[in-house]
Picture (tube, one colour):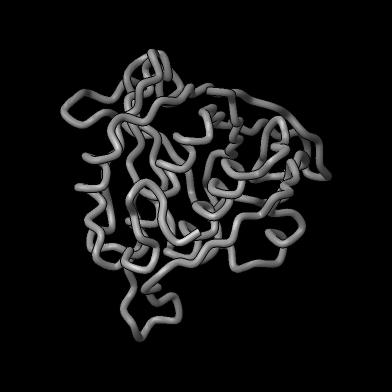
Length: 218
């Protein structure tokens, strides 16, 4: 596969992420938040998880935006989403190190569909990879031009408007984009894919929310 939704993977370096978002339109997905606890030698911990549910076409749209920010002319963009809830969009921002940096920016993307996918697709690779360069970070922020709503303990009030933020180096964005394309194209998709294995094994960058993707029909 060398082209998707009119985007040529060999010419991604020429793509403007903001113009791409305009052409793709609003992302149609459902956003949920959940917590789960796990025990370890240091005690019991509670982890927050972002759950993103969408059909194959919208997973491909998000993948294209990630690729555009990693490789194209603009490193950051804002993708509005239609959730019917308080989550209003996804802010995508890729680090852009210089060519002399070991994390230098790639110039193109090649993709071969992977027909089989597991629930934990990055395990055990994620345990030994370079977490800074190769794992994405997911966070929450306030909607631009709106005030930040917090609870009494300082946590963000998810009942109020907010956005999801995805940060990382180009390697992390390209790996996440490839995973979303695989999930959208696989013949027998798993019910869900988790970037992090239950028990706290890392699958996202430090200080990131855990993330689950679910592919739905439509």
